[in-house]
Image (cartoon, rainbow, N blue to C red; front, side, top):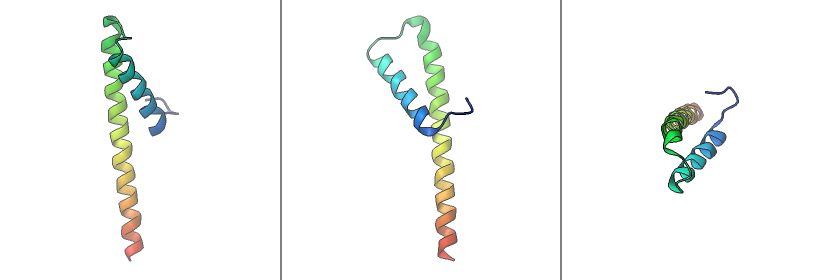
Length: 65
C-alpha cells in the first residue's frame, strides 16, 4: 500500500471502484485489476478498524484502573 494511504482515502477509492463496476464503466480488461485493488483496500480498511478498536479498548481499560 502507498505510504500516504489512510482509511478515508482507501474507503473513498473503494467507493469509486464499486460505483464504476455498478455503472458498467469498467472494461473486462480492467475488471480483474480493479477487483484486486478493491480487495487490497478492503483488507487495509479492516486492519485499520481492528487496530483502532484495539487501541480504544486499551484506552478504556486503562481509564477503568
